[in-house]
View (tube, rainbow, N blue to C red):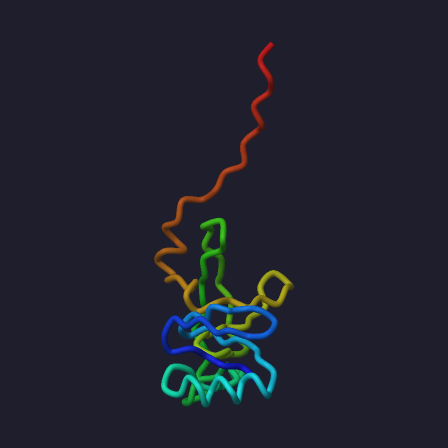
Length: 133
């Protein structure tokens, strides 16, 4: 059973004390969880399981979707790619697409505009500096 604290809380257990942080669910045995819910009423709650939802990417009017662009961890903006699916895992939103033959799960926070893609400074490969003699 997953319990979520509403305030910072120290819980004493036979296996050792545990510090609960608000908003972060912690797994307890059924017995420990029920006891904690009763003793700390109003300070903890049963954590709701996050539900993952995946649905096909389509516009209500049936028109084609606009291509997307996204920033990688190295700061490079990639694209264009057409979304195939939209996904939600808790509070995180994803766009699923195929780009250069690979399936990509793109966090919605990483989306960028076409203008940003077109004006980005392109990385240029250079020859490695050789040791000085």
